[in-house]
Length: 259
Image (cartoon, rainbow, N blue to C red; front, top):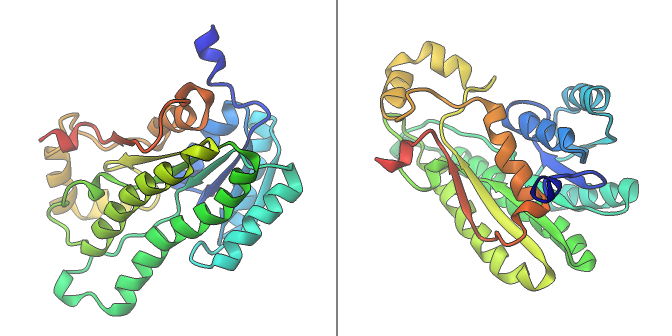
């Protein structure tokens, strides 16, 4: 029972960027079920509020919704400020917000390239920096960056150089922050999911069979993951159960990267 108690998130405060739907919602749900209060940082405020109401009703925890464009340092600072104002602290930050644009490298516009890099990489840094300052004062905290197996391998057959590059950078940013902030008792890790079946990816799985059939054929488990299959790893990394884990890359991909 001592081990199980380490997973208890009661009294903790967790921020999830892009937490209104998809992987973010699944991870917010897992943390709420473990007892954590939840802050959803989102551009889509109505959807975030709907998710927050459901978490309060189902899990009996407190929630806060903060409108946040992760590419804005000012918004990131406001996110940290509002969270501390509401709860007095920040225990966990899950940097989940991200996008992917499937365009061939020779055809990617500067605007497309910068949009992906700004959200997927700069957004992770700006939110980590703002929340990190709070955690440094607290002398505690766990930051969990959502990268991708695409930061470790090149996906096939779809073109997505900007996405792959951004996720590889998130992995190294994770290690860099882990090294710098360990002295402040802040742990920084990254989860690298494989192909997951979400609201955003379902149309591709259903309508781009030349892609999805290839993906499935390359996954040893022969299926995409379900969002709730990230619940266990996010609670582990957020909680005291992972007290000696920092700078780690936790791949959850059905075995895709073993080949």
